[in-house]
Image 1 (cartoon, rainbow, N blue to C red):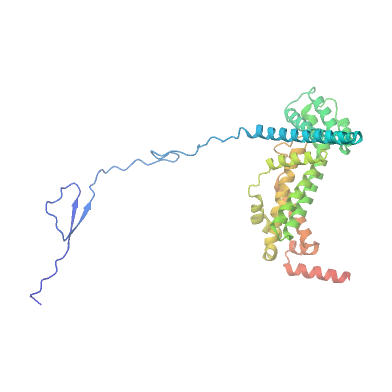
Image 2 (cartoon, rainbow, N blue to C red; image 1 turned 30 degrees about the horizontal axis):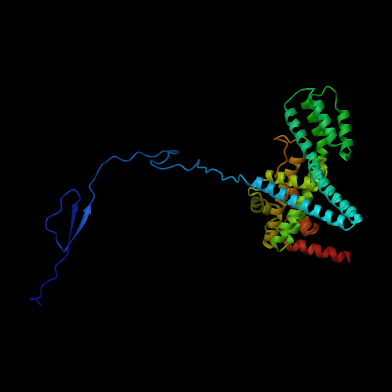
Length: 379
């Protein structure tokens, strides 16, 4: 045992970097290098709003828009080519029919003329149907200018435009009576205020009532529908109908062109910035109670979200179709419609008895029992 050689231990040495390495390196040694202390000064702190050095800021980064410059000429060229092809085919048809018999040529000529007249009338009606919206836009712009203006001369053109807009419509009778009641010494600002109170207030109330009705119907249908595709179709159909109803209240005649243009304008005004999610998470438990949410929260939450979205579309429709634009303080908010929509939706989906039981603090089963008792009593 004593004659055996003992194993050599590994030695560890710590050497600074600034010292030169030894000429002879030990194979059994492990060297740990230590960094030399450079400076005792701390780096300058970076304050709030100051960018790091050598760092590019991307907050204002914008890439140039890639524009398709030739798509409009290409579309016009395609339409022109299609029109030329149709005209050539019609000419060939007339020539063939006239060569067969003069009566066939006359018949083909009548058909071609009727076809061309139909196309021209359709194009004319398309541009003519948008004329009321252009007139309404001019009236709204003039009303914005007159809101802060106190002039008697500029009030007369506005009266004429408003009378032309409601001419031959049921609202025109009320408008004439309100204008006759306005004193002659009213300036433009006072005339607008008089029309707001005596004429447009009744139209606004009717528009709000129709918005609540359409929003409630949409929420009930979405809440009862198990398919997302059906929900989208229902919401689209109800939104178009609601836009038509609101537009008719403010004197805009319904048509396909007007409906489509209003729909695009309304969608541009709608900002669906999480209002439905906020209502479902914050307002809906307060309105219906916890016992209600334990059973029907999922479907009612979806219905409430769809109802609030319809409410936003309705308010945007009012803003688009109202002859006198809302002032910033008078503009109706979605919060004013939330409780009306929620109470109407509860009544639509649950019935009066169950809704009364929930509002009074009774559990959900008590409301159901009262509904069953009332039905049995009627029998």
